[in-house]
Length: 124
Image (cartoon, rainbow, N blue to C red; front, side, top):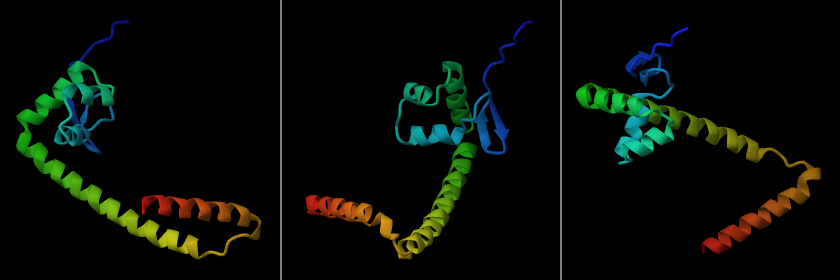
């Protein structure tokens, strides 16, 4: 049984432009490029082969305008999702905080309040 080794490619999936054979998107690579990580660290971070990271970098370079436009959309969507969940969690945490504490947990709550007071005192 012979195994064909195709060169890595960039494919479009439901998540956007992706390195074939992985779940790593070009936008994930772009995050690290924008943070000025060298390609070798990006490769290691995502456990990519040299050929895969080279394919991604080459695709980004050749299609820079398209990739930058899509990356901007991805960042906007990420921000919208982050804002939604931040608001959702704020409301949820407020509800949880307003719930009465169980008497059997009073010792634990006292210990937590003491640790919180110590942290606040150390920050000042």
